Length: 297
Image (cartoon, rainbow, N blue to C red; front, side, top):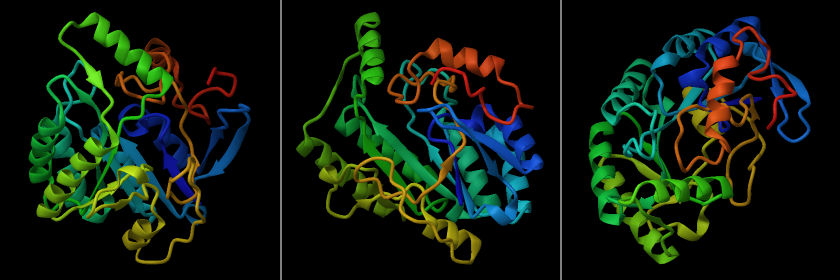
């Protein structure tokens, strides 16, 4: 069993104490977002094949990573570093700090543990195609040698994402955004793939096969093969993609929607930023699940 923590919220940034308590207890509860049924999930080392952690701020999670490593369980961190303006990512630490944390991770546990995410790519004011190439190149240069993979995708405007971007456009006269045509997006990803190769990284595209440029491949964000490389032993996991074209292995996600206070305007996992902040403020690190099963999804 692979544990995903979490595509629904940033557990490393905001819920490190909760995770550490559950790790020491040897179990947690994962709540199904559709029927709100709680499921007991073992976190005992014999029962866990590996962890995939997702974050935009790793620093609060250092103690937890050491605890997982000491338990002998392999882990990989999917670390999103976009270097977007605060208007778009209001609570994400500056890129210089997140890059430093990524370098710490790679030095401490090895580069196989780190996957950089430049994701999602939003076409907006002061961040069009050429601007993305320049920013991406600067980040790739800073991360060279720390990882061998970067995952990208072009933003998909889910209703909640579109609503927030529209609200931002109305509030700020200088802000605009757009959805690029497939050819334009594919050309940009091809340029990013060439930049990535120059810094020793393979570019992978997350669940957007129509945008795959030459020199790139589909991403497997929950990657049993990478976990096996970290562990030095096979990690068997059946396919478990959560949407068409997803290549991820099967995993149990222990997070919950509307609990991440980062406030990123493009986020698909938060419908109401105020509710997310309130959920974070009232969460109880001693509780078995991240939120009560009767919380609204």
